[in-house]
Length: 213
Length: 213
DNA sequence: CGAAACGTTGACCGTTTTCAATTACAGTGG
DNA sequence: CCACTGTAATTGAAAACGGTCAACGTTTCG
Image: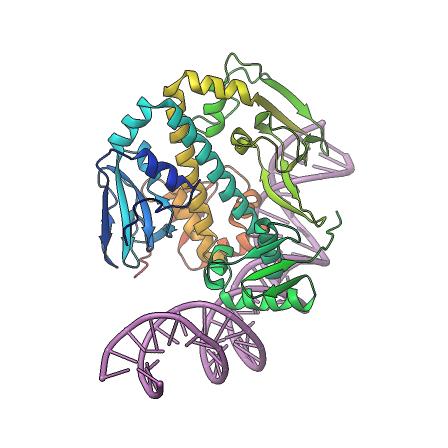
């Protein structure tokens, strides 16, 4: 079916850029697993929105080694830094079949120069994204798998009693947490055994538990 | 001595905001260890540049628990997200004596609205920061302490042969890597023993080592 | 000069990863 | 409609790795 309206979650950086790109020559194309979206050293000509699939950005070092800078998942933006760089500093390769939107850098910069209001909105979106990333990074500082998962649950909990509905698979959540899925399942079991959470179908309900200073 | 000119590293987000705040009523004040900069729930009135010291941002949950969202270090910006929020969503408490610049939110937003060029520059700065944070997050996905450190060294290496001059203490670098300093020293020793790096005073020189796909 | 932080290494212990095996589905094609 | 394939969920057991604790030399700084 056609993604006529909302290919990206409302409020996300991708959604913001998507609406901004109205009227620009944006290509929406499918790339096959293994295909290269751009090469390190190519002129940085565009910024990309990933509608679905998975793209890996890797940097090739002088000594032949290769390190991953980012694995972009569905709904994310990648190569934003190309806005301020002349050339790509990494390769982008599709890990799975993927659907990507290519927004030409010059057109985007022109649009921003012409519309200060949108630019400001973009600043706010980016600031939000920075906050999210820093929170994620901070989560990783929690060594214990159980406590890290609990902190994640608390961060994402809503309502009263606080609960989390998990749409994504635990496998994906494990990756975000920097744990193996086994560790996550064990942590879930431990928390439930301790009565700190309760699992009800798709929901995880949190129980009160003070953390003294 | 007076930080008349360059209180923040050139090119950093903090430096950009600092120059942007010229002519605004920015307060530069010292806070003591333990003092609160702002409280969760307070009207979000400002964004902060941390000249030195350490500030911890924590969120208090409904159930009495408390999770850390960020530990800001010298040279960093914190509470940027307040630009788009009506109220602070966390407490900010000084962990050490600290020196902070308070940029009023309204003045900053006005300045940005009046100066599209600066706003665009800010977008680029933020995009760069997002890239950095994502790279850092990706580093954390490398489980092995040795390999993680090596990847970090490669990311930061310059010149030929690639080498890293470390100005910060290894203790701080360890924190950025999400490792204890002991683990970092061991990893350094291992890498040197394997001949993958060579340490010369303040420098770490990398040796070629192919990483086959 | 003394205290505090940094640098470094060893030993031990606990947790997580890894590997392996099992159940439960959801989609697919005969 | 049912085997069939692939992925998610789940649990167990063993191995590996990093954290923690301890000890010590060194540098820094008031």
